[in-house]
Length: 360
Image 1: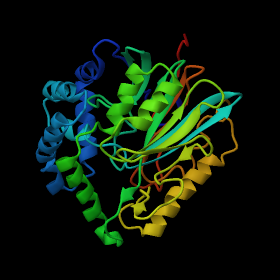
Image 2: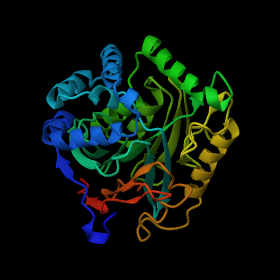
Image 3: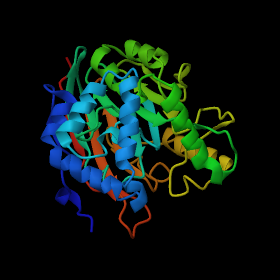
């Protein structure tokens, strides 16, 4: 049974400005193990037995890639001492919905993170981190080195959505083959930085919205990705649609799900919900479109209707985390979600954590 109100657990804020992701893993060793066990429960037993193999493959690829964090991930894996750490750091989210818009003249960014793995909402934390450009707050988990959702007070906020899948086939039952083909192609021939690790590097090194946007647009990445970015001044909000070496940036309609704004075959949208692996090409595109349209059309205000936008279809079978960020005010709000076996949709399993950071 899910607790209610103040009985829900609080999301931890972990200060790792000294020591970074390795220190986060060191301090959260037991929490990282619990998260790993919860996530693996989603896999059938034969697949769980393959985790060491997946670790080896991911480790081999990351150490050959342009990732600046491979040595750090190796230290994290050694510190935690259980399989699954490399695999966690070689993946990023399946489906999400994100919106950047202005409210009261200030840019805001709101997003849900949708993954099939249970435990991500229950174990979510906020890591307070630091780089040459200043400090930032990374919505993360112990043992994870990248950044999927983060906010740098007085600089910018950003989030990652997974981009559509390049389909070599068209039938739904062949989708796993296309997913596997994309992974194999990346493993053999791509050496660029993973999109989530690029985002962390941007938070560590970029001092402005403009600098962050240019870096996210131009640095080659290992897989297609959609970045949503919000700064501190009017007009500083955009969506950056990326393939490995090209980009398209839009300042209008700054809302994203898991398809290009203008669907383009053979790219197929990533679908949220329980039919993610069985839906047709057109159903996947429609699923992404309605989630994006619902969030873009939300008429509330973040200042007084916090998380009221987390409702179907934005809220779906796999929603794990919801976040609201206003970098101009140094404001970050996070809440974790999980789905109970008898429930149709996830519900909050944490209190809302609000951080009001000092803006320099």
